[in-house]
Amino acid sequence: MATTTHREHRSLLQTAALVVGVVFVIVGIAGFIPGITENAPGDFAGENSPGSLLHVFQTSILHNLVHLVFGIAGIAMSRRWDSAKTYLIGGGAVYLLLWLIGMFSAMDWLPADVTDHWLHFVLGLGMVALGWVLSRRLGVDDHRDREVRAAA
Image 1 (spheres, one colour):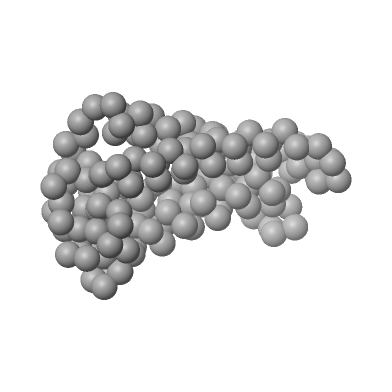
Image 2: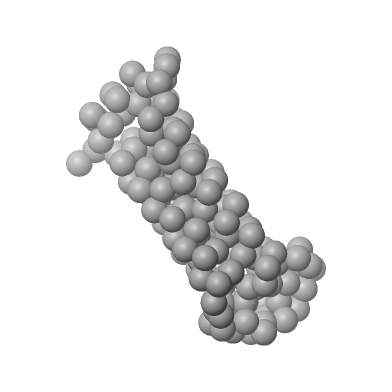
């Protein structure tokens, strides 16, 4: 089973999954850093955690760990075209589900307020859109993407 590890063989879809994964890792790490996160790292879990990333987004140790794991998964899944697509569309669907759960019911296990819920919506929509558009785009790079998929 071949993987696409060389920069010249990485599709735009894979690059998008890699970037999203790296951003999640950075956010997960930032959640543990005092100054970036008020009351870092906060409670382990729960909706009343005092932790606040950038003084805007409620966070906790569990929340930060989930971001780290989700980011590492994105980095790992970006190595193959099909798994990068799954990461973006599937991960985006998970974030849209979190948005729905957060907006329409109680999530006492996750520190999140309205700001977090809308961020989940934007992340979910953005990830699904990236996965869908970049896996279906036509043009100059489409041939290269097909070669990458065939080699994977």
